[in-house]
Image (cartoon, rainbow, N blue to C red):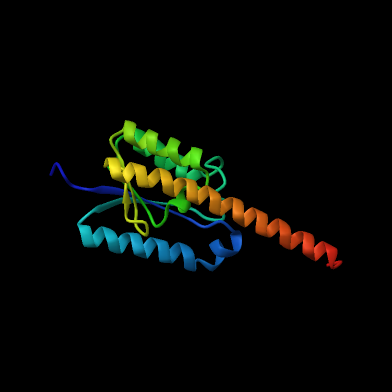
Length: 155
């Protein structure tokens, strides 16, 4: 079966609280498995980074394991719920896609309906990766402002 999709599924949550509650990881897992069933893809493995920030790909053991398996040719597509689950850093996202492309592996983001194996998909990917980084910077700014306000109030 030359066109069979063998998918690595990547899920991540940012905080330990989200990881302990499990709802976000479970929701991501179920959405990706459902999509695999719908398109007839075979899930290779679910890679889970629980309680890990999207700021950088450093220190994310499941992501690093997925990249090692990609280099071994274990699958031909990576699926994630949203690009920001892979990373909120544009440089990291572009590097990840470059590594995947070197091994003839496509990336598919379920919510953005984005595939990197077409010119239009790659263009949309680059725009979306910039937006993911922008979103992260906005979150950092909002948290900083909230902390400054709480400090001003003596809390």
